[in-house]
Structure formats: structure tokens, C-alpha cells
Length: 256
Picture 1 (cartoon, one colour):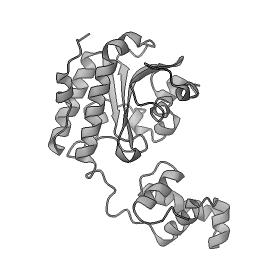
Picture 2 (tube, one colour; picture 1 turned 60 degrees about the vertical axis):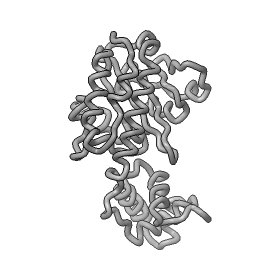
Picture 3 (spheres, one colour; picture 1 turned 30 degrees about the horizontal axis):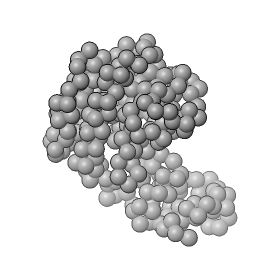
Picture 4 (tube, one colour; picture 1 turned 90 degrees about the horizontal axis):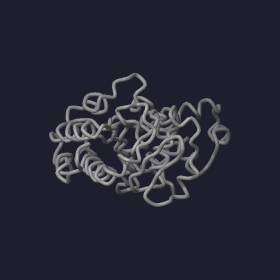
């Protein structure tokens, strides 16, 4: 195992769009030297994953997640994986396996997370995870998975690399978001229709699909169709995020 180095932090820092690929390659090289396969996500609520300045998916082209079942191809990973769930309740690096979450200090919220079918839902037997809490409530995550896919105990690696993995993971994700956030904004063509906005306005105040259908005089299936279309346009993973993004973009108000 390599001795951790603060030089690794500067190596993964992104100064501009053209620097993304180099920083990603540095992060990948560091992880490999430590016997790990790294998987960074800049926003666990976003189906998109980090890209370089040319729009190439880093998970595939740099970090080597090429399988059809790779984590970044699974749009439900943020909802299904115990690892991403844990990132909502923890801000420090931790490691996890089917037996539980292993942190520097006890976290009662993580203790309550369902670990059923851990390997299937997490796509790994064990991982060191770095939650990255960013401004405006955005949460990123960097997962370090052992190259030996049979490994289930990462206590030694966590003891050696946990803190430095935290530093380089946060540096990479935070600088990526700072540089690339505007470039990954929703396209200007993501315009909601009048009917989609109408359905979302009622959804925002807690109306069900059935109730909305009665209010606007359309079938429940039609309401679901409009809300689903809006979620696709806004690149949202569920109904709540669709409403939230629509409010952020000024289509609807969350004030009653």
C-alpha cells in the first residue's frame, strides 16, 4: 500500500473545464495504487455523473465502469443503495459491508438503514465512502471499492486511507461542481408545457393524482403522464424532485 500524501489533494483539484480529465485521471491512479476502484458522483439526486469538458462520461472513460450493470447506468441507485442513503445522514468518511456501517463515531441514523441484499443494492460487497455535502443542499459521494471484489473487510484500508480519501474525494467533487456546475445546467429547451405546470402546481400542495385529475377534468393516467414528462425534462429522479426543480426554475411556487 502507498503511504498517503497531501500531494494527492492538489493532483485532483480542478481549476477549469479543461482540467477535469487530468484531475479524474489522477484520482483514478491514486485509487488504483491503493487497491481501489473509485466511483465519484457529484449529486446523488441527479441521474447524470461527472463528465469532462467534451461531455465524455468519466465513470466509463476514465474510472473504467464499463459494464452494462455499472452503477452510473442505474437511475435508481440513489434511492436503492444503502451507501447513498447513508450519505444523507453522515458527513465524514465511513466504510460499509453487509454487516453494517463503520464510522469514526457512532451514528444512530445509519444504524437504522436497511442492509437487506446489501451487495445487490450497493453493487459491491464492501466500500469506503466519502459523503460530500455541498452548498444549497446538494450531496455528492465518492465510493472506493476494492479491486478484489471478494473483499468484505476494509477496516485496514479505512484506517490507512480513510482521512486522505475524504480529502481528495471532497476536493475533486467540490472543485468539479464549482467549475462544471453551469455547464451541466438543464438545457434551455427544457420547457414545461402549460398542462405539466398545472399538474405540478397541484402536486406541490399535496394533491394526489386522483385529486388532480378531478380538479383539471382529465384522467389519472393523463396526470401521471404529464408529471412523468416533466420529470424527464427536468432530469428528476422522482415526483418530489420534479416539484422542487420546477420551483427552482420558477415554474411553480412552493408557498401556499
